[in-house]
Image (cartoon, rainbow, N blue to C red; front, side):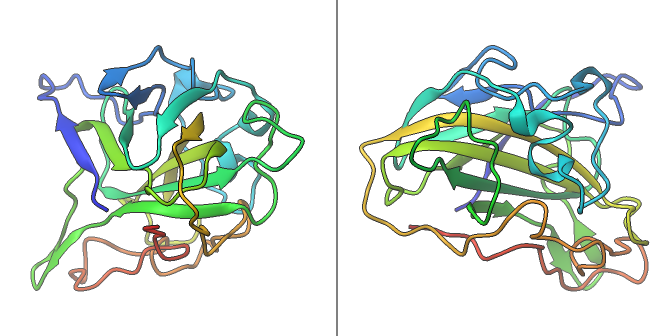
Length: 230
């Protein structure tokens, strides 16, 4: 699966260096900010997470126990997140989902355990002269919920890993949010591989600690498991 991106031309000097993902996009409609996305502590600062071993790497600061509303999404349909003001730094985008266990709801589940599976990835375009990052300037990113996803409630975790200062451990910046959805008309797939946050990444993973400027990047390995396509 490939993300599609909506791009906005920012006026000179108006782009903020940091960004967040405040709204789900369902049925082509942008929902109210933080209605179906967990509002993390300090969201208005747009600050990234940099410690992959912290609980904040799951849903952002304080958001593992924050509750939002849950919206229905048909399996096999396209949904997305808005980026505000836009994706400013060069980096990669990944989307994970986590099935809510029995006895919990999307609002009450904290996302703990090895429950997260990857459903989308957008990486760099790599050539002999280096890497370019196609999502720079995006104000919306969309992906498809695999048609084989079983019916039920899920957390959806989006992350953009900014790599402009990632040449040393702890330098990568994680811009992330968690939304709450209920998949309808689902299939009989078995999502996986399953990983935990924190736990899925190490600060020294080659896709997290990398100098994207020199020497020129001629290959890239994203962190985390393979994408589950259903």
